[in-house]
Length: 120
Image 1 (cartoon, rainbow, N blue to C red):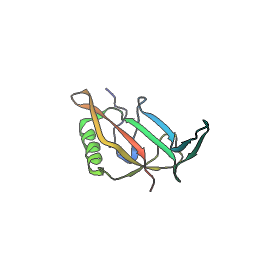
Image 2: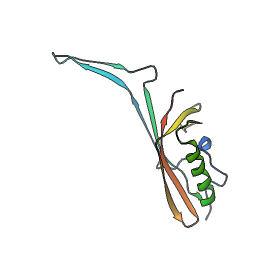
Image 3: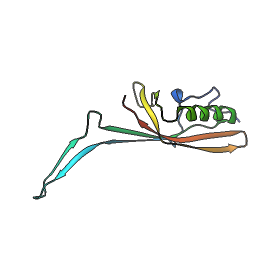
């Protein structure tokens, strides 16, 4: 069985499967007035909220364990990663700080987790 990813994957070199998805929203404030009028405006200087639901390709368990160790070491920290649709790397955090391991066979697996954009 040929594996799509042989070298060690890191958080900075994440590869995604087709199950991965991105959600984008804008944080805003809204005020409702008595006559039914609503006023809305963006909240803060970085109102763009980006989230990724990451699912990695299947990889050998030893490489998966190494990637999980990097995730565990990162904990509450942030890292730089260039998403497939971005022109430059951005900062990301695990949100929530948890991940799931899935097995394709006893020797192969993948990991899934969520990322949120982090503004420094």
